[in-house]
Length: 459
Image 1 (spheres, one colour):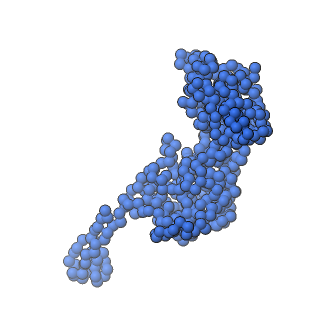
Image 2: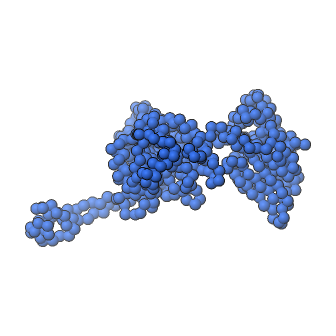
Image 3: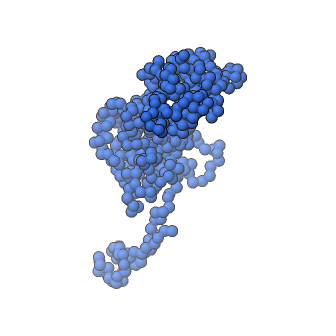
């Protein structure tokens, strides 16, 4: 409930006193103080966003679609993850580890929007205007319609938004700004919630897209209340290994598009550069005749990616052998090791097994099971995998191979990169005679993991 308090206003001079007195201390008049009840705003209530259609119900066929036209970007990777461009009035939350490249990527995006569409307001609550200017100079950004504001109070930010009416607003970061109407410190739950709600309301009211940069916790999740992710329209996560140049932009939530898309960038001196053909880049340094190396075809959203799976099996000097996976799920690695031991007859009880996905990528889908198992067997038997063979399939506990989704797209990508053969589950080939499979690559269907090793390993 809203709280009330009393003030005493002098009818003669207009002076305000916090308690009643017989004589006004400002003008000296007697019996001129009159009580006025003031209702304080309720800070516990979060204001709801204002809809672009107004406060009255509108029939669905009468809703105008003109304001929903996206702003397409020339940055193909970012454009794909956003679902086809920036939606006016949409609110996007971008999270990622410190130094991963969030500010750099957004600064490059603002330069493109300022050049092609209109003025952009970049609000930095953690860096000064000069720091942003030096970063822009390093990236070669000199757009006249890109305005930088160093401000930490949300009320002042809203005043600038109302005065400028920009095409895009960036707030870096939401945990560093505060509202003057709240007594708590910046970054607290109430401050983050209230500031985000105020910015979201302004974006909906003026039909301006708002991009918020969010800090992350030690576990990698976005810091602050979980309600923050529910309030915004899109949540993007920028990921990457510290010692690798590649960055992956994933869509965790997207009200305007798919959440399965991923954009791949490379961090270099000129900023975040798009990687338009990541499969070719990941396989550039591969040694074709080395044992323990297999090519898996993984799907990142609607994009097929060819990644190199490396495995190393070596005799353990300890009673408990090690199982180490980098870029693969540890439970899947233990499962595949058990299947190789039980169904194929490999004695891995005294072997340390290490599995790595080259390039800092992470593959969690079951379609990479067969490639991981073949790579482990290749290292254990010291026999290389056929260099022209792409491998995809899920491995069951009985050693059987199960089909995977979007197989034609995976095969097309493998064929474009020069692979002549593909090792896939037999059920995919026998289904409708494999009519929907591409003809430019030889598709080899196998039933069990044993059969796959007989075909995939060089004798």
